[in-house]
Image (cartoon, rainbow, N blue to C red; front, side, top):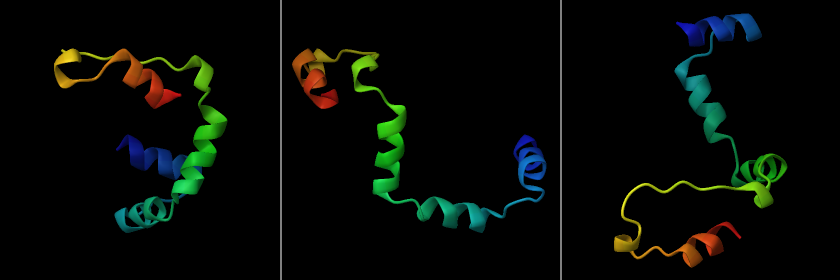
Length: 68
């Protein structure tokens, strides 16, 4: 119900599931990258890992390379 209320408040109408799916599918990888480049600061990234990471073969160096 809160989602419907937000749609009514901000847009003055409710969106159908088909409309939402169509809008999501219309987003391109380049658009996602453009937003990520404006929102994510690579210098301030942090990562939390829970579990036995070493057993999976993931090292600190691999994680550092992945976010570099």
